[in-house]
Length: 67
Image (cartoon, rainbow, N blue to C red; front, side, top):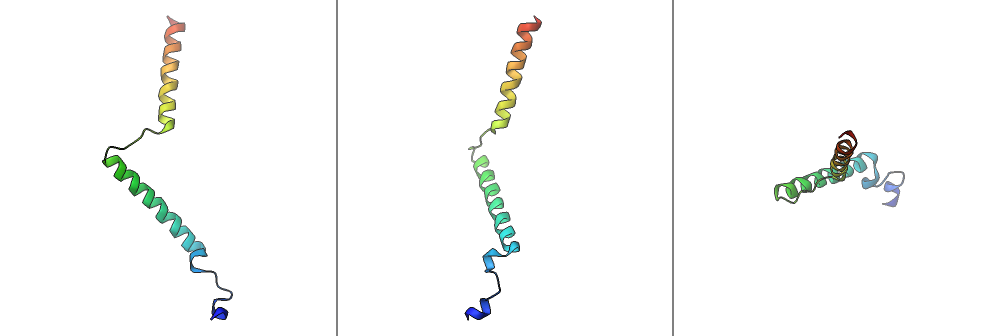
């Protein structure tokens, strides 16, 4: 029995299987995020908050220096 497995990679370690597992985990994360958003548990990404902060500070500086 061990000889029949010799030279073969375990099922879960084949590159195709690793890729499929990664794809399935990604799909599960996306599904979970969509479910959270539908329940109203969404969060604003950090990069969006950063852009808003930069725009507010730039607007304030423009108002101070150009007035």
